[in-house]
Length: 344
Image (cartoon, rainbow, N blue to C red; front, side, top):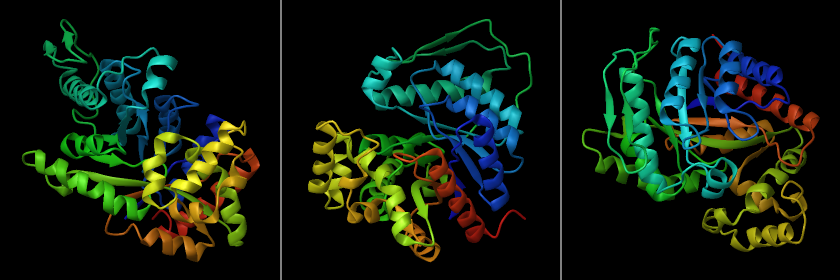
């Protein structure tokens, strides 16, 4: 498995420094998320701080930019990185799109399919001057009289799709260069819920095989010489996700439906989503994260081998101070060097 990393930083400078250190430790890709920062601007900062690792968005929101703007940003980032950029896209949820961004939601699977089609078409034809005319229910494209006057690094940029549900996972297999998991994704969930949908999607796509889609599993990782400290550090992170009813099926799959309900009730009683650690049981933490001393985490990580092509490691953040996040992230970067032997 390839080892990749999602860095954290209180400032863009700190974010970039964490990416640089992860690259030196042996991370093959560094990923920029989108919520509190722009994924594409963050990716630019990571590109400037690195030289060999690929840089991807995990994920950029697909519907809050036009496909043309997304394609332009992807072309610029690919040029800036010398061909190291990976465009990771996801839909987000309906409320975020419509209420926060005033963006169209539509039917997310069909909407994302047309969005990816348009981005790829624009990237391939940006310098040709040809008319771009694509029909669509959600993203019709009509571009005439446009010709990008600058050379492009590549006419094909990898597009990875984030997916958790069956239909979106099948779409990732049908059209994506890669699939990116939710931030919590256990080996059992990957094997029993995700891989069958990947296979189903590939079966629907003529001429595609398993080698055509890279599976990137996300793993929240808390490492400490004291296993109890490692577990404590990640409880708030699990509590944040457990407080969201959208993930009921995920927790029920692990036999944690009642445990999740207790977190939801605590959240509804007024306890903030980032302060739910006391309600999260050790069983919940063990089921959905990597945690413990280094040997235990390496053993847990090995359970993904043969299921995923790459693992995206990240440190827990929810319910922690910046100093605590930094300490946890430093441990993850050290773990990456242990796993890979460091950059050649």
